[in-house]
Picture 1 (cartoon, one colour):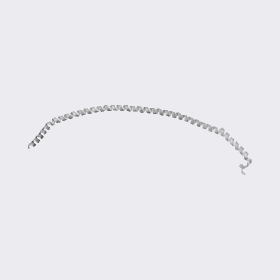
Picture 2 (tube, helix red, strand yellow):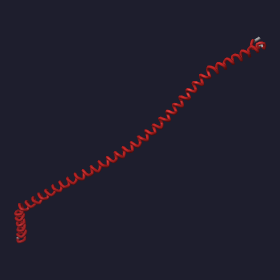
Picture 3 (cartoon, one colour):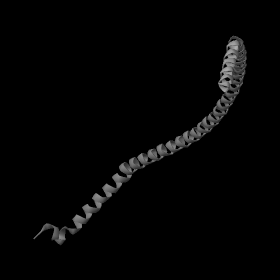
Picture 4 (cartoon, one colour):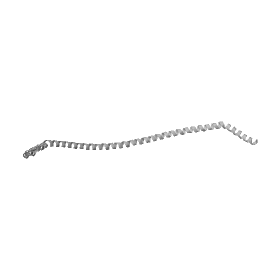
Length: 148
């Protein structure tokens, strides 16, 4: 017969079962559970301190982002003002240069007109006798042809 099924050993087996369980429970309570609780509490403290640091860093990041945004807006405003001043200055300079160029152009045109008028007058005075002679010749030939 099998020793596990022998009823005379049941009391002994139950006794040692309870003793083993008692030793296991006592060792768990005195050694392992406090160690596990210590590890869990350290872990919880570490997580809490990490969360606090994350919150602090998030608020600092938000402050820095707001500061950066305000600085960026100020720089955009400042650069647009600088651009507007540069545009006004360049328009003013361009207007002055256009005025100078227009005055020079008018002066050149005036000189060219005077020279052209002088050339025309010179040509007229040079060719007037020839033109008169040619006109006279044409008139005479026309008149003479009418007689013939």
